[in-house]
Amino acid sequence: MNAIEVKNLNYSYDRENWAVKDISFVVEEGSYTTIIGHNGSGKSTIAKLLLGLLEKNSGSILVEGLELTTENLHEIRNKIGIVFQNPDNQFIGSTVRDDIAFGLENHCFPQDEMDEIIETYAQKVGMFDYLDNEPTKLSGGQKQRVAIASVLAMKHNILVFDEATSMLDPTGKKEINQLINELHKDKKLTVISITHDIEEVAQSDNVIVVDKGRIALTGTPLEVFKKEEALIKMQLDIPFVYKFRKALSQNGMKIAETLSMERMVEEICQFVSKK
Ligand SMILES: Nc1ncnc2c1ncn2[C@@H]1O[C@H](COP(=O)(O)OP(=O)(O)OP(=O)(O)O)[C@@H](O)[C@H]1O
Ligand SMILES: [Mg+2]
Image (cartoon, rainbow, N blue to C red; front, side, top):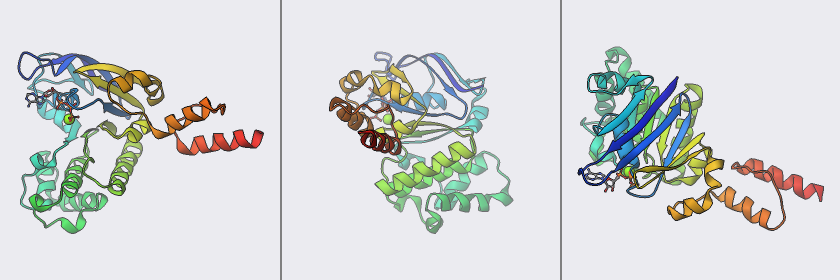
């Protein structure tokens, strides 16, 4: 079964301009999909439509085979969770602990298991020592960590991250990405990550490139990065490994296509040893 099927989706905020225009895509269960596109291309709008936070003008959205409708909204939100770009809009509780608890209560988690779940996920995102702190007094990055813990604790099958680690320092970003990857692999979590981090895109299974509310490109990262000119036109970057391999090949070093640094180093070593 597909985790998500979107067909001919349209949405306009003002009834004049399309923020999302005739978008169709499929996300396979257990896959890691990244969505890229420059500012204002429609990425967050797509994420909000998937959660039923915005009501589509037309088209259809199926989440694990279930059509997203007003009647199914509660059931859909048990299946799919989201962490937003701006964590400030997401806090309700007076402490970090209350805040994580709020989501769990909404999803009817048993009261006696709650403390353990809250502490486990606060620990995983490095916020255990802040459980009794006021969320509004945390830094942007700390708020993002709490927002991520709150969503992970709910154990949805599908998670959407809308630039959810944009305020973290490079080490923090790496740690959280690693945690999400572990959950994705171990628990078969379906991940949709909206990101400007091209190195994260290189690690994903599939990429959706959005431009002016439409899908411009889709495919595996390698398939998408091959369309380098189109990406540059859309003001998007390509990963370091891809650029480096291209520079080597222009200088006569023909090595296999890869987006993994380890694999490229192996290829270079093999090439050099053959000489
Ligand atoms: N609440 C809103 N009201 C009116 N127009 C909006 C609203 N939110 C977004 N838009 C418009 O819809 C379009 C898509 O915006 P969206 O936020 O989905 O882009 P994005 O790809 O997430 O951008 P970014 O990378 O900056 O987060 C933009 O033209 C934007 O101006
Ligand atoms: Mg956005």
